[in-house]
Length: 250
View 1 (cartoon, helix red, strand yellow):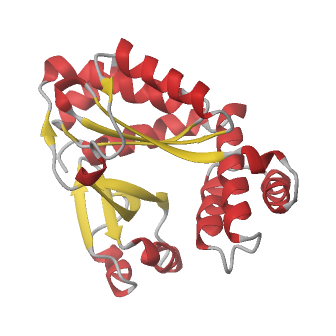
View 2 (cartoon, rainbow, N blue to C red):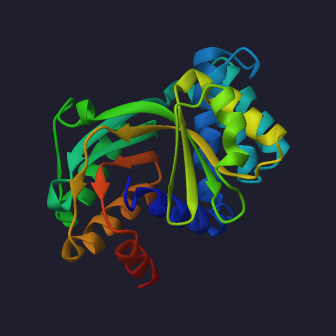
């Protein structure tokens, strides 16, 4: 996806700074709590929890914080009971489809704030189902293409990966959701350093965005990602990587 992998790389570098913020750990802990509440506190038998815990470890979240989040999720009567998963759908500048995944204890508050972010950034919040059909859930692993070759990534194919593609300095390895853990483990056992590994809603169609709209689109995505309750943002933009780099550096 032209530009999309580059944006993933830019976001990863930004996350190196963001992960030191308490707000980032709060989001990770909330995801762990919900996964533990819904599927139990054992990562070996709860794939969603295993992924949430791994993401927290990737962000250098302390072990005590992770264990405390699991305990809150599995404990009766805790604040995890009040947290629910909500998905918002809308359109950004240039008609880009955007999916917003949130974990919130107040649906009305979060919905109002997400709607405001869309409105002030030249987008609009849509009805449920308005854009979800343009995405499919896939496991996505990002690896530094400057350090590793495509041949280095062959263990991922043997572990079930569907596709390997490169774009401006990063590899994206795509798999079915159920194969993500096996793909990640195969790469790690082969000595491959992983930038990120997560379940993501990948677009099945793309919208070409010209340079005049890119800054507005990226501003909208960043503001959504910075909202306290938002856990992930997915969009179907197609932007030239050099344009993205100029926008990111501005």
